[in-house]
Length: 506
Image (cartoon, rainbow, N blue to C red; front, side):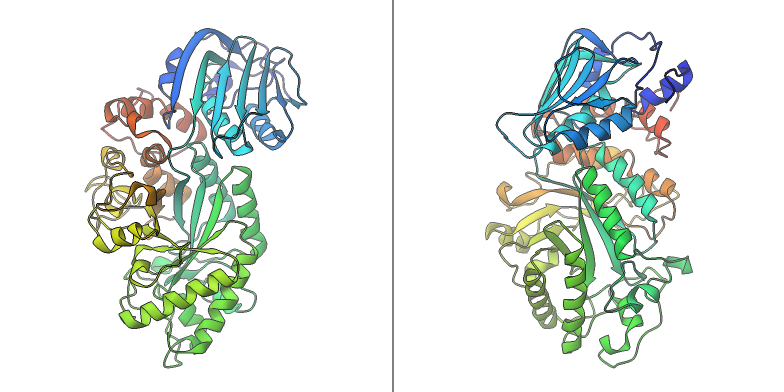
């Protein structure tokens, strides 16, 4: 390990939230006490104090019982050694202690001699670590205090790997970016008309044939079950739960092309590389359809530790309403039989949602009496309104990537709504949280994903994490601008929205 970094290299590392274990001569920078007013997502409370903690080559991380995994993560990010619990000076302490008031609540206390993050659970420590990273300036951490907890338990991002395939490394890169803003759920859209992206051992052609192409005839691909497990494990190390989606009964051309017997007429259609929706449907009246789904759900449930499987249910325009109800009710039972709970797009409420089923709302209006009525009866709702939360929508008419069917969404639009009161008639108690979907009809590279996600992803993340009382556009745009040096240092390809007063180097 090298114990000395040049000033330019150190500045880049610190901007990324990665100070160094051994910087013999830390950059001489005044402590940035304004950092406590610049955290994204905004914490419940934060205040600066007198003094500065300096990271140098003598700094260590100490981990109490149960905190070792988070400590190892932080040690890797900051390039600092990790040791057992102790109370010596010049240390960053991670402590699991006290009454657990929430799965992700934490307290951060920074003083000249030590920085301590305390939480009831490791997920809270990890959230505190992400806040700590934002407080590092020039090798120093200004003294101060943060007390924090999330507003909603579900704070998600969706990545569509069906329209265009993204490798394990690309998904892991996105996971790292999500975790910095306290996103705790990654919804993977694994199957659609254009591609099937997960190996199913009992139906191998789904991946080998159905996964062979993508939109515009671009190269396809799929994850082996071991690769999927690796993604799930990597996400878990960042306290992110993976929810896999197999969209049903529509959006299924890749499956129908792979196995003729899944079609009502027994004839397999050709593979599809366009972008139209609503033309495909599994054959609701065939028993083989449900044997097929039982196999798929059984194998997927076995490699998915999280409690939810997403079964789609949107844009089933080629399925009659009666068949749709029959199908969705039966598939919910299959999911439950394999020990999982159902997530589905909000059209699920036209069937009979199971008590544990959660509906994901993606419509472009805040007035949907059917969904509101289901919420009043106890169905949970995750909010992803397409005209506010879809990260694949263009910023403006000139945006080179993305679509515009739902809206043009600038940063102020993504930030300017309140999930707790958004859906007319739905009780606030029904709202589980928010999710920012990123569809990939026009996106092919990590740089494309980043351009559409940043800076809007942090806006949605703040709506999910921060108290409603902190939501203030004038303040948020300044806090968002301060993230730009970190993004540059990490090589994130972000959109320079004219609404944000970016630092001159941005």
